[in-house]
Image (cartoon, rainbow, N blue to C red; front, side, top):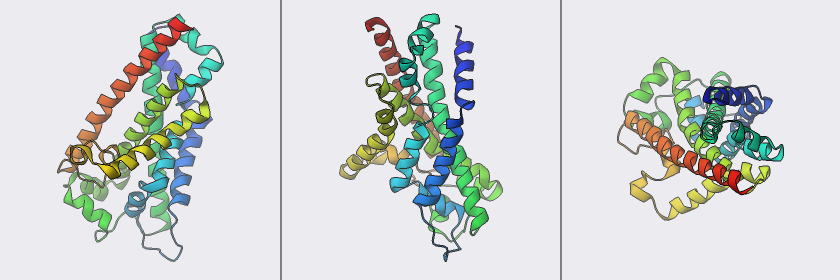
Length: 264
């Protein structure tokens, strides 16, 4: 099978699956029920709700939900004897690249759409998109005009950007879960890897922030934390960090796939 064939097959497998859309609904539901808003408090904005939603157990749960639709696909393929067939029918490198890419993109897509749906829900139900006197807005304003410009002109675009940042983290953790599944084929354990790994990192971050916070994975992908001095630089840094770590995870997935082919 050629490279385009792998990509096409993986694309249809992801976006033709009901689990992807269930994942979006799951992220939205986790935000809604995880960050409870008192009915008496009608002044909460979408910006404040997203700020609160990205932190704590709700954020960790969303990361796990994003990995559910596709991170366990390698486990399924091994159970169905599909893994060996796909690798032997073509180039294992192309197969690993297509699979890793779609695992990352599926998790990112679920987070972005779920975040935007939650923001729209809060906007319609409560006090709108943002409030210039809120702490969340002031944090964004301190970083520059890129985030606040999007928020004022096209609010949905800003929430797509915020979801993209957190989606990058979700994609990396989904790749980590897929790599783990090549060692232990247990779908339940694979799905829990993003939650367990981030929980461990949060505990470690309480002890030490490496590189003045620039290597703290939790901070890198938070739109309300200023690491590089300006919002544009923060976003670009998150992209570069994701590209570097994502490539490393892809190489490890490829190595493990080749090992499985020669030892089974």
